[in-house]
Image 1: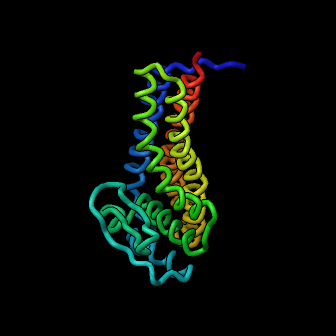
Image 2: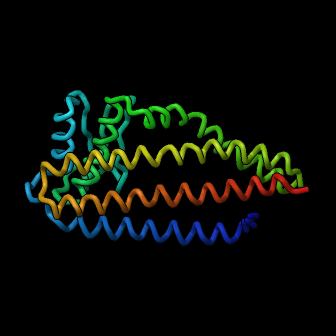
Length: 223
């Protein structure tokens, strides 16, 4: 079956999906940011416990500015937690902190998809920077082959997004398992809801990127 992919249709879908997922994660995070954790621990303390349980005492935890700017840096082995998560004593903070600690555990265990994603970073950055100039030039010059080359570069960036999905899902799975020994079941379920909402943003972004890739490949096949 042939599918006609319309640029404006994809753009509208991306706006709807992007807006919906962002609204969902913000509302979910906001909801569970009002629920105190039963043991009174901060996000940093919960992450520290998870790291130590996995023998990662060498990993440092530091507060960083911004909201939902949490990340794990495998190069420096530093877990960066936004101020609200670092100091927060809520279910949302516990979920996010444990998720990022899950990435540190992946790094320590040499989790395959995470390692593959790391190797893709420079190539994906190159693909992103090269794709758009080639695609735009191909469209304005009516040169389909140039569009195809641009789509090939864009495909590398799309691959990075797809590989990111299992990495994020696995980090959330590890986080939930760790929290099951720390929080009561209803609060673990709340943390899972926060992490699921965050995961949906990655899924939506990957889906939209795949649709754009198919659209640009279609333009490259024009006669």
